[in-house]
Image 1 (cartoon, rainbow, N blue to C red):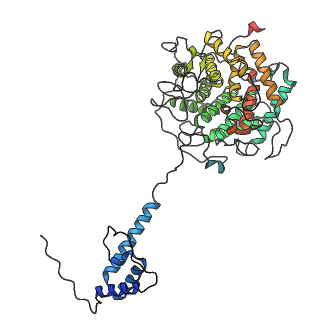
Image 2 (cartoon, helix red, strand yellow; image 1 turned 135 degrees about the vertical axis):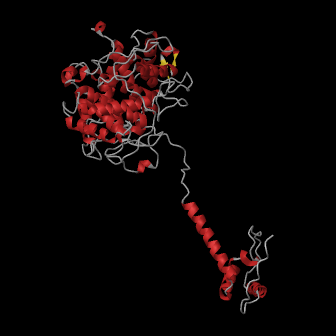
Length: 526
């Protein structure tokens, strides 16, 4: 038991505290309108009059005059407590109360300018993947879940039609002097005028109708523009746009991270991430395949390695971030990733067949009617098939070795060619994203269905191009296509991709006859 504390030393001429409090009560009662506080007693016991601001002030003044040390201690303690609480609030992490956005731009970002050269950003850590050092080995089973073989097609001559000589007589069937050729030249000219001084393109700046919710990825915009130039045979060393293509590729190389990722943001889950990376890898692969320039080899190898390390390990798809066993990909992103893999082969860089086999398993997971129809992701109901996803799935099957007369291929194509899905440039019906895939599927097959369908699409695209208008920013429209005149189908994405996205997709569709040689022989059609 501790000893009692010694009594404090006597204080000279100290006023009686009880009398002082009584005088303060009388003084307050005499004030007009004064009334007793009904506030419940606080948890910390204080003097009865501390609940009243006026009496507390008077009391502190009185305590200060009397020199009572307790008042000073109390004041200091309360002040320190308030300061500590304020510092705690200031340094708390700030959380966004809004919903998690998986869109291509958040509302906050749409008001911010994207620099032409993004800041240095750190790579995403993933498990290293061993690169193949020689020709890939065939699959051990050689078959997908539905019994068909997985044999990636020969790509040795896939890009052979992109030269000036190869383009002759292939665009619209009328050679280089027709109106389709003129539309392509106008469109490429518009794209060239939109390039920024740093070599990049943007989806949202410098022209009208950039989109209601503009996407934010200069990597995606730059890759799309490059694909349009490369698709028509323009490279850093040949064609009419050598400087534009060279500068665009240089910009892509400058934003590639140490782990191979080309995306110009370091935000996990951003919807643009693997679209932009796949498109950039695809463009870099085409440039390397068409020029043989070794400066593009390492970016290609790093880009494809990043892509394959991001693949879902069991089901085989891709989505907005690196996949693991607990996630699932979607066919929209996977379609671009698969084409980047095939184009890597065109550049002479081997990819293991097991990686294609895994991608084929993903196509099985989103397929309906024995592989004839396709939906967005495996967890969607089987009936949620769409023309865009069906065409993307069938194109993936063609590159993975399905025969032209496969019953599911014929069934799926017949479904795509229904009158209700025929191309239409009216509000809510235009869908260049869907047409981009349908065009490639039909071109590979050839024949009358291809001729009729593509003739219809060509006319719609050419007739709706802005063949007149300003060439000056920010009203430059000559050679482009208007994303809001009319608005397209929801899954076309022009309402967020804007004028540059729609223009590139229209050009890629018009370039279909020359971008890739048909997979199947068309000798029977001659």
